Length: 398
Image (tube, rainbow, N blue to C red; front, side, top):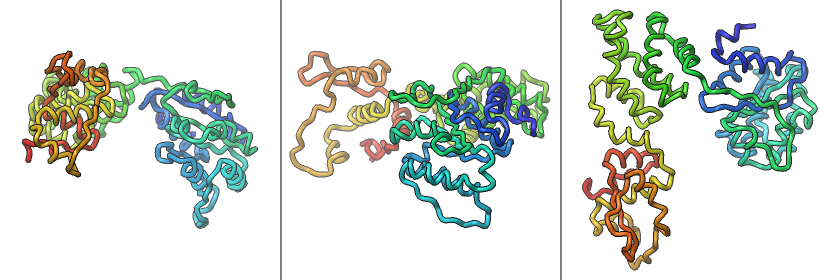
């Protein structure tokens, strides 16, 4: 058996628990396992790595991709069918519309010689989306071992707790396993493990230590930190490549990378610029002030419809009133005036965030008047998040 501790870092307890639950290949395993934890806590990676390394028959399905009952059931059955069939067997795709059909077809497929004497695992990633499907689906998966009389375990992977899943009518309780967030020591160990072969492990570990010192207070997402580590490493080792510093000259390396890490702080979690574009910003030494509109978005997370209110407010603030028909009316004629904002409270959150400012008096009969105070860069960044081309609707850009 491969040494899993060398493959899966900082998750020894969870790996040990799962191995105990899986047991021997021919043993009946626990009917259902519910694994939960925040994003980038290793749930999917650990589960997939464990099943692949131990060479256990399994089907992995993402519930975001399979957003209807039929798509989900057919995906599971067809993947399972490929496991049970030989490579030369080109059987037709299986169709399945109900959970009753799924149970019947599942029993047929698992009669195959290579599946019948061992546990089959069905992994449902992003399992919280199951709650939006038919009411019998979750209880059915929880009791699939009982319903099919087969050696099958269903593993649910989710970012929310089991209590948010449990139906009011009750159901079979799964084994619940929690994946806590990685500590700063865990992140240091995992990220240092990715060091490029052309540099020493100590040199890359020192870089990761600097990176975490800057970003750990605002970002603890392993995927995002790994992205930032890869993106900024060429700049960190630039003095070494140019012969201006050695790998041990940490002070000079820190002075070189510090301003670029501060720039990167402005785009944490924000992928409106690609990795190649960010590298160009570093190469051209663009002033951080030019990223002001983007950085503001990282600190203000607006609800979906509030973004459209802010965009509308910006257009109303900076377009002449006479241009409204030109931009927004498809049919001319008498237009019935509607009260877009029913209550004053619907727009006060944007005022609190200082994105809008009150320019009229509260006692005005036709309601208060506001002006949008954000910059063009900011509103363009907001508009991009909702796929709205605001430049097409600005008078100054005609």
